[in-house]
Length: 386
Image: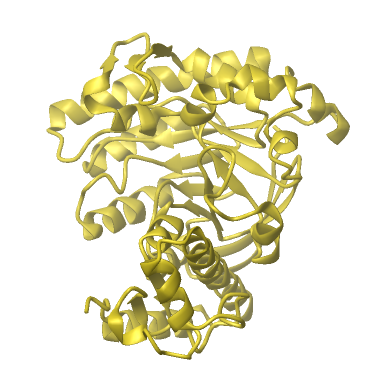
């Protein structure tokens, strides 16, 4: 294990910590922008650095299909390939295979699926998922899991849990044998990648407990809560997170996968979540949806056609310092790619600045006050639909 996790401050169940990884130090609680295919869509790496990105998430499924993990290995790994000399986390590919729905067949051995690109047939076993992630060379990699759909019967959730647990053991066994096969990590004192487990169990708290307890026995350097944001009500998401977190080791990073909106990630950090990721800030940006201190803004609305204000009067990101709502609306209506790029930079800045505010509040002992302000703002802000 080459991960050092050191808690420096606490506030209730929240904690501020540093996570030492082979490619750098990450301050938590942290939000990780999603770089699906080796890129955060429309945002260059230098801009990601400028807005405070500490760690990126890469997608094993997409990188496996294109350009291919062996090609990335030959080119020096994902860090070098995408010119990102900072920490990276790769998912297992399980969620993407899950989302293929009719294009996949699940067995005890793994998942056979058809590529969404050309229909070609592929097979992911736990061993192959780890093999691909070792080739990509991310600082943190994930066990191969099956993401349980919503809604799912208890019987179905139990079946999925058992499959995920068997795959977790197989993932760890393969990783233990092959963990040293990342040659460029030798420059970092012989450190290796870090394998995280994933808690599943659907919306059943007792199955989540069982999954967490069995995963902890594997003594992994970190643990994730998966199978959320798959269509369940937001209250269910919170309930699962809140009941599962105490079951995970306090001296290891705790990661909730695929969440959420700005006000939600503050709540989850307050519960004790250390790491989060989501495509929402960039996906919403490409559709003209901006997150602001006054609520969610649809920049395409006619009311902004001659509005000379910045997108958010309270924001100091590079977009709000330079561009107007009128200009961003023009870009959106003209379908200019720059519009989506600028919107993405703003939304990512909001997410990353929000997490910095949470970290500062934990250190200063002012997290309760921050939560009150966030909740009041969330309660008073309406989505701009007109």
